[in-house]
Image (cartoon, rainbow, N blue to C red; front, side):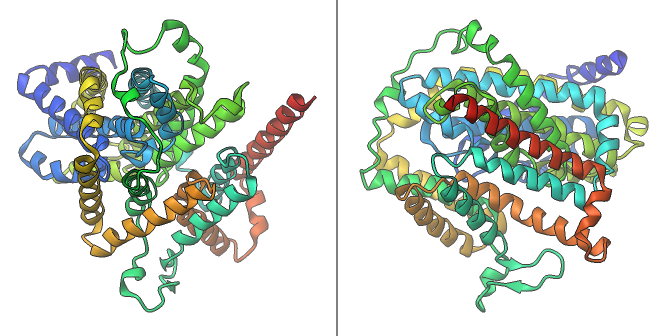
Length: 495
């Protein structure tokens, strides 16, 4: 293995152009991840045709650089603007923005960048050493197992609902209801379309996410009623990496726990970082000795979100490389990169294209370091965005959001969807309805329904067939243990 890694690094460093292309990919990914409305998938789809004339190894090395940079870049706008740059950075807003408003933007950015780096490295290590075992476990997941995973993730909403459990559950159900609009996933029946052709395709994640966060934030800011002074953010000072050694030592358990969550969710096809960051945040909050501080500006929340979302990178690559199954939208485009060069990922990939695979591994390690260096170097520049007058900045954000929404499916309807969900987000904030459960409900609504219906089809309508699936039962046992531990914690605090 060490010899193959040596060969992979040697192939990358054989030409300065190779290193430059990887750095270009990382930089492009950071920019696309940081700009509201643009995503990692958009960056990969733009750069994929460029790699057609390159060798297999370096083309995929560049694309994985974009993947890592894009996943990490979302923390910038999440912390500075309270707008998640990517769906993977939703939970970063919860404590990152309050930290910035306390004058600790440097700490929030520093912790986020460092944990993105650590989460990526841990997932790469898992990808290299335990990918065969994880892939073998994942392939055993059928409809009931995937259904149990989605139920487990949805149940964790209880820790994201703030003070009112009722409002949080209503928000989650609203998200699941919105996910049902359009064609049903199994039989393509039309639902809640009201005769509209546009509604037949339903809503996609980007308009919902960007509308609820970015557009609602723009409306509130332009109305002048957000009450937030950004000067305290732009005047921050940073020493070293932005945090002390003692602070990061206290987060080691949190980092390992959230990296495990991100890796596990990343391995499961179709879920990805948009769910992992929320689940990791909720797990960390419930395991904390001071859960009441979450959402007020503590580094624990930033550590949880950024470690988990970057850990999904290695997790999502495992089924891609070993089984040929993409774990999320980004790895689906990486699969396209393989196909462009006439290579099919799968069990024989390591034998037929071993050097290319280890070039990818080596490039991911190099990209992690380049990402950290680029983001630390550009930190002061990121903050200068807030010094742009709002009458210039806000229209630019809106335009970027509209471009991102339109580019997803090339539908004007999605641009109007942004406005609609912007108003919905504003009303939810005004009446104390939490937004994260809606997002998680929307993301998991389709896999929840799809796997439930498939399971019932396979079992001829017998729901109790789930009892014959030990892996599915394991998640329900974990769920029961989770709620039991949470109830015990609350009782201990009240006594």
